[in-house]
Image 1: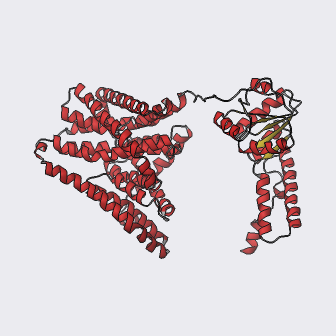
Image 2 (image 1 turned 135 degrees about the vertical axis):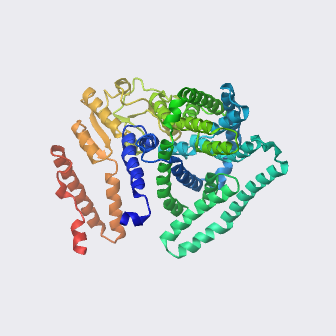
Length: 585
């Protein structure tokens, strides 16, 4: 009875969530990424898998709100000044890529003996890259804020804008579409521009006062509702003006990017964004019509290969013409070579206007979906087989025949500070690091650092490890530190080895490798800061010194017990607060 009265199909909701919860962690654990996990889960539970859902397009339309919210959050990171600085990439790089792609990709349909109008629309649809996939990839790779990520975002923004004239092109190419007057076209353009202007005015003069008023009510749920209202309301307004939903959300985010409520809005929208974006990828997987692919597999295979290859060539060529490096151009090519969700909108409009048939719409949609499914795989192959990034060693020297009483391996933030007492005492030291950029930067501050990988025995010998009395390993990665410590202990047993430990477990690992002295990078600074807190509380300095020394001794005793036991040995030496909390309760 409860199930009947609820009015909600909980079975479908639980199925969608369950598919995502099972597939995504497995795919991420296998190194295949979350996007491919969602797509595979959607295919498994969709009409052509277990057939638990019969209408994936209905879910897809709802899930597109995930893309909308994603663009709103991206907009929050884009202050107007930053967006203005990107204008060259948006209207230069983006426009050139879109125009060339439309012209060249349209020829694929012509080559396959399709009508010119339908071929042009098919090529234009494939030109529009998947905002959802690209943004998810950039986020997972932590590249959204990087210059190369910003250039991809710029291209996506231009493609979002391009959907408006492309929909107008569909109406023009339709039978009788040529009867549209110039006045009709100008009216459509004016409506779009008017919608943008109205949203900008509302954002500047209404949004901040509204959020200040709502914040004064101290009702968190109202702020969340207001955040969703702004995102969805802006998207709806842009759609009514003939623009894309995503463009409206992005503009709203930009207008609120300098607001004092920015971080609150981001926190409110983020959970909805994550769930709906995952649902979008699930729906794309469900929409993959395997029967259409089976009946037209040769055509689809040729089309996917041709369109992706041509689009990839154009993206790479435009990137190189824009003076991007080969590595950046190749990465952009792999990430952006697919069709996108806006293609479904364009093809649906073309179907409604009679430019393409129902079967052609299904085939074109299958081509786009297959390209979207292939993208995560292409990115994995790119990351796995790309050559190591060559580092310019211009202006840096490799060690050769050096000698010093101390050899420092690694000159990052830890090594730089550790070197100061030695240099103050005029000790003869040799410093090596494998980061050429850091070496050049260190030189401007008066340091001489040699370029070399401390994991290589020949470099260690050339740097004087054989004659050094002490070798200090100060590298950033704990795996690297352990590997160097093992090598040094084996090859240079007479040297005293001192190493930077990442944490307690790493310190124990270094001790087992025979390191003579290890130092956890945060231990002494954290202990000193705790002492500062006691001083703020008015505790006598002598008592503070006694307390910190007691903590230091207990920690050393616990570490000694752990070297012969396990990580939990000496647990009684830790001063906890659980008993105080119970007493207070």
